[in-house]
Length: 378
Image (cartoon, rainbow, N blue to C red; front, side, top):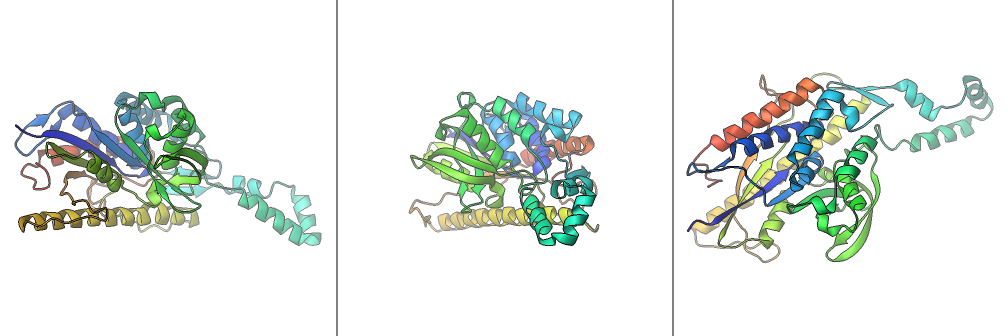
């Protein structure tokens, strides 16, 4: 008798590139999950979902088995604009460009009249500089995620979750990464804040002040929470940890990893301004490096376990439990430097770009599902 198949879904971060995941998932739900023997599991149901950043946003709807609600959210962004997610009076996103709105920035830090400023500059220069510094310190982000906060507070309810799910977020106080499940929260409000924290792009959205949840049985309150992608852009380890608690010889676990970013970052020869430069370094280049390192470690361990099994050896992890060779498929964009593959920048939410990302997600999901005799699958 064949073993029962179970599926874990891992969703990475990537801002508005998250539309790629929606396209890939649409293909899987409509066409099923195909295995090496040619069998197709139609209407697949995931048995565990792990997400960070936009992956946590997408994953939360999936874990509530509300894919229609998720599609509506992305369709609203596509038809009504990015103000369904955030608003900003400090910057304006024009495709791949981030343009500072200096008139509003000056109003934030120089709210006084020109005459008053001139007087203070002449007679009270230090007082003026101190005042500017204090006002500048009050700017916590370049955008406000209040629209997304409202949506999540309306949609995210503990009673609606049907699939085990973790969302990853990190504390700016101690740098710790946390990945609780909905059952670890005592209120819908705290759970919605956790999903929002995981989807909080650093520098772009304001961090979440506090979140209270249970960790290892203890009720804790963490402070200054932001996107878990700063520590763990792809929550593979969350999925692996869950599988270890639910593993048996009668279950074949398969991991489907849907990553929003390509293996290599797009080559951009333009000269970004300081805001665009800082954002690209922190949210594109560095997070992509974290992601690639995460995958390389995962693939290395998988390969070592496979080689050890050929020699009738067992490798143990840091918890003294046997390491497992995981069956997996990775769905991710192709090299964006090749013609026809560029899925755009993280904050690019133009309708045509979002639609193209969904198209590419479906296209690559089909390609991966059609690839039979994959030694990393079954």
